[in-house]
Amino acid sequence: MTMSDPIADILTRIRNANSAMLPHTDVPSSKLKLEVLRIMKDEFYIEGYNFLDDKKQGIIRIYLKYAKDGAKAITGIERRSRPGLRRYVNIKNIPQVRNGLGVAIISTSKGVMSDDQAREQNLGGEVLCYVW
Image 1 (cartoon, rainbow, N blue to C red):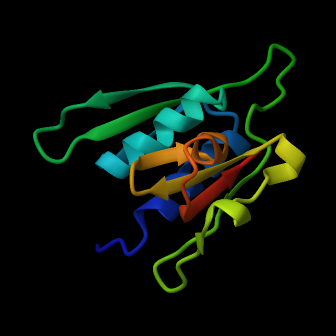
Image 2: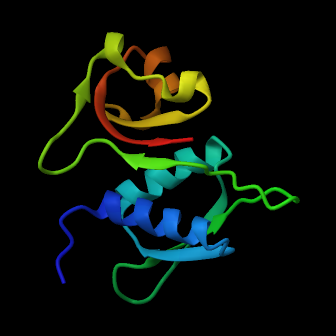
């Protein structure tokens, strides 16, 4: 099975596991996915992730985050740019997700970073997804 949009796949797996209140979910590994997960961890949307070697490309186990009362850390996750319609922004048009309560993950020429980091470094790029 070929996968035309691996970022949409990881976001859907996280969304489904989060809806089912699962403690973790597994996804096939890639460098871009690891960078997206690093930002989600830095922004406190997930507990963490581990790389599991399966003698092929590897598997990433993502540990989801919930509050003690059962509230979900991720209330929404949305793919913005996709293979059929890429969405690029310059520094002036970097989106603010939920009036700053969420984060936009942006792929720039200096690597994958959050919207705040892109503003600090004065960089635009491809808007991969929104998380809130």
